[in-house]
Image (cartoon, rainbow, N blue to C red):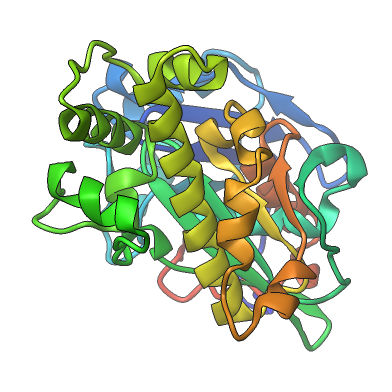
Length: 338
C-alpha cells in the first residue's frame, strides 16, 4: 500500500491539469477542507513552474510540503509531458524549486477514478436504468479537450485504480449510416482512435463530416456552437453530429464496461458530458452501451451516469491524500521524494 512507501506531508498541493485548464487546491491538514484556487488556462503560462508561482504561491500563505498532481497523459520517465499541452513536468527540479518533500504524479483518469467510492446520489445524474453494486469494478470515461478513461477495482480491502490510455483505442463504423459517413471524417495520426471523434475537436470532425456527406456547408466553428444547435434541434447537421457523438461514446463506454465487467457502474466525466446531458438521455447512448450481445442482459443491469459534482479529480486526490491506506495506488515511477 502507498502508506508503506511514501509519507504524505501536509500542507498538500493537489492539481488537475489538462490540455486546456489547470485546477489547483491546497489542503492544510488531514482533516481540513481544501482551499480552492482560481483556475488557469495552460496557454497563458509557458511552464508548470510559472503556473504554480502565479496560481498557487501568490494566492495563499500556505506553502505545500507534498504535491499530488493529476496529468492528462501517461506517467513515464523523469520528464513527463501532457498529451495536449507543451508543459513538461520534471519532479527532481520542481521539488527543490518549491521546497517540497515529495511529489506524486498520477494520470488524470487514475485520479478521477479515486473519487468514485465517495460519490453520493447528488453527485451523479443517471442515464437510463441499471444499478451500481458496492465494491465492484467501476469505469470512468471523459470527453473534453481529449478523451480519457480509467477503471477502479476493489481487492484486499482497498480501491485500486487502473490507469490507461483507453481514449486511444481504435474506433470503427458499425451501422450502414456509419459506413456512409466514415469516408468524410478526418483522421488523426493516420487513424481513427476514439479520441479522434469523441472530444471537443472530434465533435467538429463529425460535424464537418456530416455536412460533407450531405453536401451542406459547415458554417459552425466551435464545439459549443454545434452542441447548442444539436440540442436545440434546429440544425439537422448538428443534430446528427451530436447523436453520432453520443452513440459512439456509448459504444466506447460499453466496450470498456465489458472489459472490466463494470457492475459497480460506468461514469462519464470531462468537460463535455454534463453539457450534452439531454442528448445522452435521448436513448442512443444507452442503447449503444448495452448492445453487446451475447451480454446484453448483463450490460442492461449496469448503471451509467454523469458525474455532476464539481472538481471530481481534485476530490479523488484529496481522498487519497487524507486516507492513502484506503487505496492501492501503485507509485512505482510516480513518486519522487527528497
